[in-house]
Structures are given as structure tokens and as C-alpha cells.
Length: 107
Image (cartoon, rainbow, N blue to C red; front, side, top):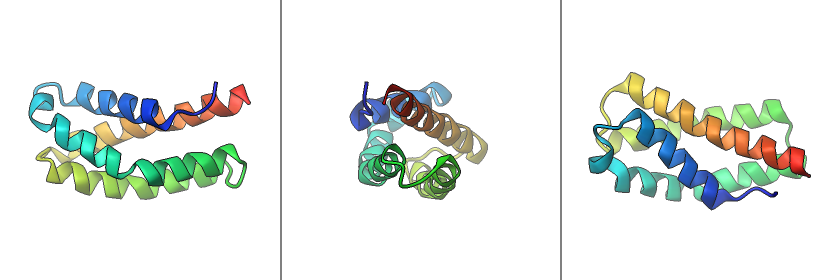
């Protein structure tokens, strides 16, 4: 089982949607576009980790950098509760990190 960026992005969107259940119908398209825009950056991070070019600590560091980008983008989507946005980002990035770790174990 390899790493599937599209499946992972879909799961990340679901994780965000689970946090913003009431607002999700209004912001779903925007959030999905945000994740689509981040696709290349996230795929590059996953590829770097899967090819052992970065270790787990560097992966976490790069995902911390992605948090700021995702936070700004989600706020533009109209998700105004900053604490909830942070919770949603954490949930989404956990999905990403878990998918990368699962792919590593399968190698």
C-alpha cells in the first residue's frame, strides 16, 4: 500500500468537515480548493519522507510550516473561530502524517 495524495486530501477534508459540521455545507468547496492548492506542497513533503530525504522530526517541522498556510486559507473560507480552525488543521495534518507513516510501514 503506497501513499495516495488524493485519498489523503479527501480524508483531510473529511477531518476538517467533522470539526465544522454546521458550517461545512457553506465552506466545503472553499476548503477543498485550499487543499487542492496545497496538493503539490503536501505531495512533495510526503515524497521527501517516503524516500528518506527527511526524517520524522523534519516532517513535523515542515507540517508546522504548512499550518500557517492552511490557517490563513481557512480563515479566507469564512471559518472565523480561530481555535476551531486550529483544531481542524491539527486534525487534517494528523490524517496526512498518519497516511505517510502507514505508507512507510508498508514499504
